[in-house]
Image (cartoon, rainbow, N blue to C red; front, side, top):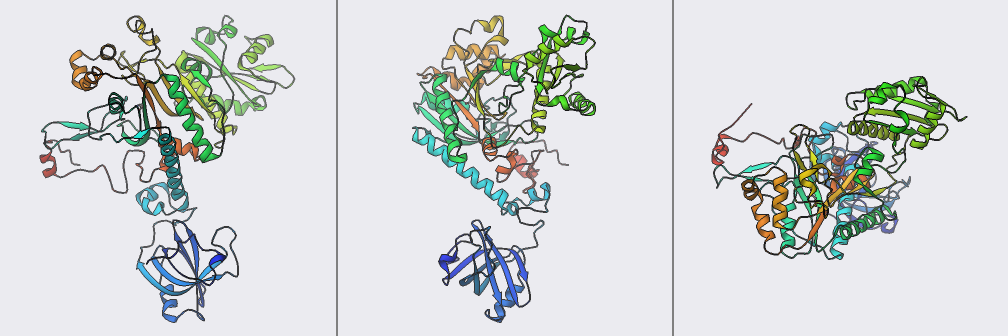
Length: 584
Ligand code: ASP
């Protein structure tokens, strides 16, 4: 028996008991005649005690020869500590060791395995298994487990069945590139790894499963942005015989359940906002509504004066920065520089201080009088003491820029409190999105999303205006889930593919299986998927999803621990019928 207790178990309740513990040597304090060792496992730390008087000499010597992270087993007696540590559950006791076995030696670890480590990100990624021994990482993995258990419990209680779908499939388009896997047995052919189980979950509905979920890996070969993972986890869900309202209700309840069970927070009914309103009011389809600073459109108030920049702009839009009137000229100049950085891309920024005495002082006083500026204040909901920041230009770009400024200022002002949770639904997404580069429309969500009833006709005349039965769940400025009511009719699906630029042959080759299935009694259905990694990170009050993944990839999509991706040898290439071996 390796252990009678874990390193987190023992308290004064076990005083005088003989116990056996196993774990890692976290630290050794050798005072010559007395040695203290912190023994660590997943459950905690227990202090081991050796001294010249009570410990046999050979054991004392063995203890002296231990190094950090050695794996040891000890037997001994639980005794009360002279100086107690109130910060840990085992802090009132220590083990007077009577036997010590080294189960495995350890090299000196490349960084300290403590809550605050001296190891940088790269080295900790390379030795991730050591990083996992540290509380911050270990606790995150345990937290993730707790969240997934709550998800499973809730959905299972609601009658959902977890069904696994295959990983070796044909492309499921979610707007990214596929990772592909060459087939050895079918020369020249490839599987694709699923970007999501989308088509399979729809087939499960055709199969009558009615309520499906799966906590599932998805794979998307995208250019990596900060904190994106090429493989990530979804809570993927689908229901039959439902309308949008049914889905929103179930998954609002799931989210509430998680907030309650995990964070102890009760939230009211989630607000709903149309996509158009979200864009107009926050410049963003995933608005952070923990704070205000809503956009005020100023076109009618700011145009037709003599200020050419505004007159030429498609959109003139501003926000009120709480207490910003007190910013110095230098601070405001720095803000202007910030919006002009290439990452944001604004040409400039107009501002107006709304002084405490009710007067205004703006960067465009030459063109606008106090009454004009008072109207700006009304439109942006500014209060005396605020600073009104105004951007102008092409509508979409300007909204994006002002949204970036809004988020930046909110962060600086401490308005994005990770312990405050402000969920909302964004609904009525456009069905199609224009690809500026190719001039073609593609599905904003995916090609299986149904248009809103009665809007099909618009597809021919004004495709960009067609709204979809699609919705996103947004939490604190992050899209944590998204889904739609699906097309379940073969003809409609064929029409959709046509509008997306598929020839009938292409549509049949890629998605014939789905359209065939629709001919055999497909029920109306819909669903959504949550991004589990991000959800867990937000609930955990942290920003980076990598911290909640046991073995994440770095920003270039590499696993630096196992060193993947990697070249494969010629024999393997040949077997896979791959001729191209671009070895470095
Ligand atoms: N498959 C979709 C996605 O991955 C979610 C859904 O429509 O249910 O975003």
